[in-house]
Length: 339
Length: 234
Image (cartoon, rainbow over the protein chains, first blue to last red):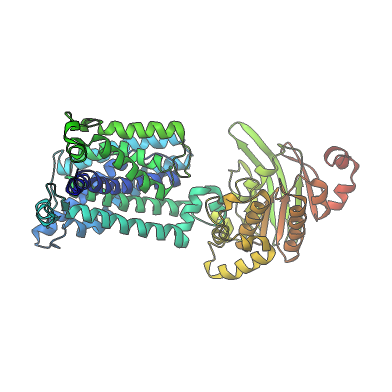
């Protein structure tokens, strides 16, 4: 094993595990933030969150097409970034409508969390219907702008390596937008009076009322933030991996795993949980054959793919994490509410 | 008339009726004390006065205004404050954030009110950036009363503020209740430590099974042999 082998192994791992896991983890973290906020404030698991992301992405796609038709772009960045405010606003209006028509009457009757969950499943079906009526069930690619920031070939040639590292623009966009959004959310929750009122409400609803905080305003605010988070998460995921309505639904499992790992109701925990799930999922389904070939002496070179789980089983990883956390630490790794 | 009057309060949880038409009142600058055995409906009556549980019958009057149907957060705006017996702090917020929430309706007066509260509870000013959930029982009670005082109430409802605190903190709290009343605030106090509470009470109510059993000045209740025998342990 030489220095070059080591460098090749590191680049290989970076290209296929670390960069993708960071990006996927950011997307999951944003999704889990939305789930955890709904749980913290409204006290139920929102099964419609995956399809809310699909709706937000759909709204962004429609806006992107309009902008593209008008010849507006922000090359080299994807046009979809420009549409985030409007798409977020549309999703916000939709969620507030659902709250008025469905959740609020349930809250008034002090419905059990189970009733709220079932209602959210109903909303999930409605959203699935809307999304499929508008854009159909098929895949849509709406990523435009420059494709690569760093090309694998350039890295190979520049450093004279056998392996290359490619970084796509959408991956960088995901990381930057996630960082900015999370920072803004944290400043809001911990530095502003309204944000503190939201945390207070999440801690103790009755005492928040006794402090003069209006529960309905907190709830509206929560849905608004959740709508923005869901739209951004949906658009980033769609830009990075392509928009396919069904995939957003199947993101529910890793999203809930992330939120529960981080402790339901705990925003920073949800983000961390996103990375726990993404790194576990990708590290366990990656085939280490080539990676080990660089590091091991020739006679020990593996004959198999050296893959812990085949990629079809990636959802099993989320499931496993979920079961382990619920068995060992039901309140999550950080302080959260017991499920 | 500037008092808080609750008449004929009737409250039920499901099928179980807790308050059977009890009546309570307190005037500005006075202390009214509610005593009674466990399960007498003392806490429920206080919650009903604040609109946290629904009234089946009866009404709550603030001066000339009927506030029976008003949302709890709007009663705060009218100058009412309540310290519940349990869950009376925000555990994941710092002490100062807890107090800031008390001033939620009046952010402009926050700094001034904060100074007053820290003067009242000097121990809290050293704990200002501690999470309230990490405090001891006595410290929590001080945060709870402090949060309520931050709303600058004219009517303060206290549900067993001395439950589970040390004798020293208890003395502080009782002294402070008297002090707060002296500034013109009406205080409705529910207390396990009945003898001590009645000593500072202008008016006392003995509640049994959700009904007013005795109602008199604090002194006369303390002197009443029936009350002494049944509720004050002789």
